[in-house]
Image (cartoon, rainbow, N blue to C red; front, side, top):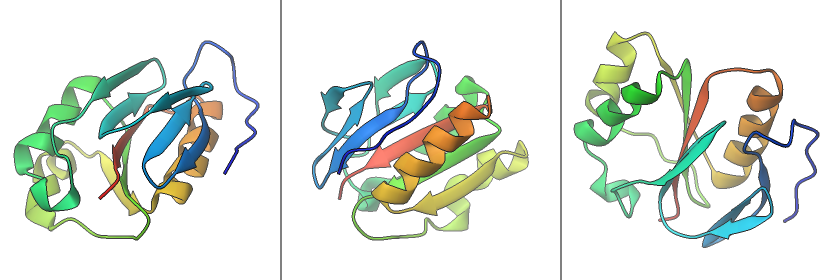
Length: 122
């Protein structure tokens, strides 16, 4: 699916997605990712089952106010112990499927929010 966003061109926005990829600013990315408004980096877990407390705690370095967890084509919720460090720092965590993550991230970036997307495909 192709997304149309109206955001400043210097910020990351999702411009498309599929079962095994996302497009950010028209550039295709595969594999687990951490996407912030001004950075993109690989993320260690290859699947939802591999998530650990350390994976979420590492996101604190990006100083988000909200973390969007994209769990692939179907919605899955992480155990609360996994997101404990984010919750203790008063960072919101929302799990959603990939299509919802792309739309929500783009809206929050357009609102100039400190959002981080944690993208998984499986």
